[in-house]
Image (tube, rainbow, N blue to C red; front, side, top):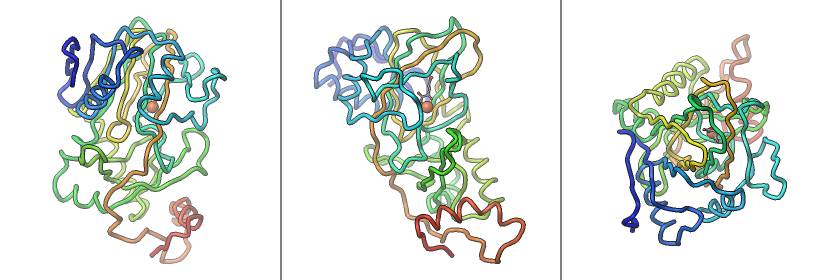
Length: 295
Ligand SMILES: O=C(O)CCC(=O)C(=O)O
Ligand SMILES: [Fe+2]
């Protein structure tokens, strides 16, 4: 049940709500349950004027599940391995559309971000609704995508060896909605297609999810907490500022993305080796490492 003192304002057609009238550091069990329901409904929530301490922030995160540190970022808060900080002055600007950490077998379920310092203008963050993006595709493309899987890797973190495969269309475990689960940051290859086909389809889909009609754009203030469902959204930070911008984040561990099984075998270089085989090398190596039966 939502507390009557809460003011919940939807801020875009596709997703996102701003909530006032709650002190997250003092939230009751019922209030946390209500926040979870709002997150299911709106996918990304913003709570202005919270100003949590690092302890408050970590404690809040733990009420949503088990927390995980970032696999590749150094953490200045040694007493809190679950919390990490991104500062623009040291390159921490996530200016490419992504779902967090999809190169992991179990990408995070949700993240809770505290905007510690933000520029007077610029540095907004955008989110996109991956269920709306899937639902707006034509039935033939929906059907084909539902039978495909994709290879994701951590190349943006200089770890191309960290790879995994997820369904292209992910079933949200709570809402039962289908989400288009590929992103330009971490998704490398459609497993069942040739390299040029994969490039064309991934190019289309990762662009499609960026269509403004599926998005919300949020203008931050210091002290605001933002939280997003990482199973059905992507996000992007506008790199349009010069001042310092610092965020701190805790991350709730995720589950294994579920979707329909692949309807076709994995693509391999069945015609033998050639100059063009290099485009299949990463996929072939991954398949070999996992002993996945190929065509
Ligand atoms: O700085 C932001 O607004 C978001 C950064 C980001 O991509 C993340 O924390 O996952
Ligand atoms: Fe992110």
